[in-house]
Image (cartoon, rainbow, N blue to C red; front, side, top):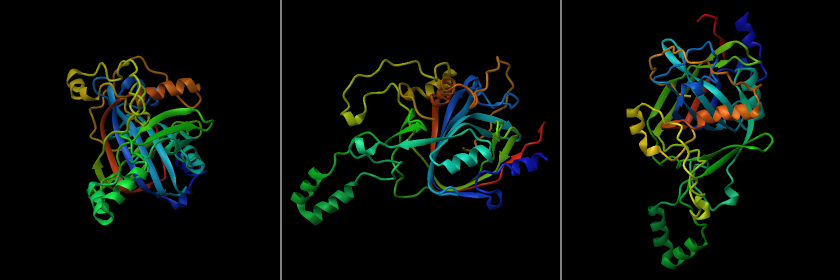
Length: 346
């Protein structure tokens, strides 16, 4: 009966068309997140995978060229890892999409905390920027040399003067909710290099559900094929220098206490280079840590019914986690299966 209930939720892409295929590219960033923050998003009866009071969260940022909902963008804030013997699954704390159909599918079919937002790259207000979001690169030295040889030095200089000045900073994207309020700001890494990385195939099972629309715990399969490479991190800056587009002028804000303060010494020293920059933490199977069952005071789970200020404050605990690794999936093809109800007690 439970399985038929999940199959009948509908309101999305149609279970008869599963697995649902998404193509495009994505960034997945792993962050160290405090267990106390992760528990605000993970159901109380699920065991959190943690070590020394920390778990693995992060952000998944994708641009889909094609999907059952057409072209759209998605950002998933991952609260942490939950134990699913013999491995672990990522738990989505918030899903942000700029497609109403994708949002409806996430809420009604997958039991995800999906919200409709606008990803505003604000390219019109600043000099030309290149990066992952537009998938463009600055002109290479070889291309400039070729233009110089073909057009002569005078022609090359004239074109350089006419061209918009490129800034040292990368692309910036502002995420706004349905009412236009800013949720967060992203500073994105460079676009993919010309030579693709190795092609890989991964299977990433994931949990969802425990929402008003889908009260059961759900599990769905995810098969991902993509060219894999390491990427510079996605950054979330709220205490960095003035915008590079403004010429780098301005004073630095007073440095705030880092969300990573209090890490075990050997981890803190390894992440020392990241101090002073808060980086925006996207779903990836990782080697499972030993699942422990500590007994701290239980944190209240934050849901969509919680006040907006409380939801945003809880989400900030994930976004301000310590970045560990950012992986880029280029030429990605992702197949997602129909969610199935997890029987109680398993």
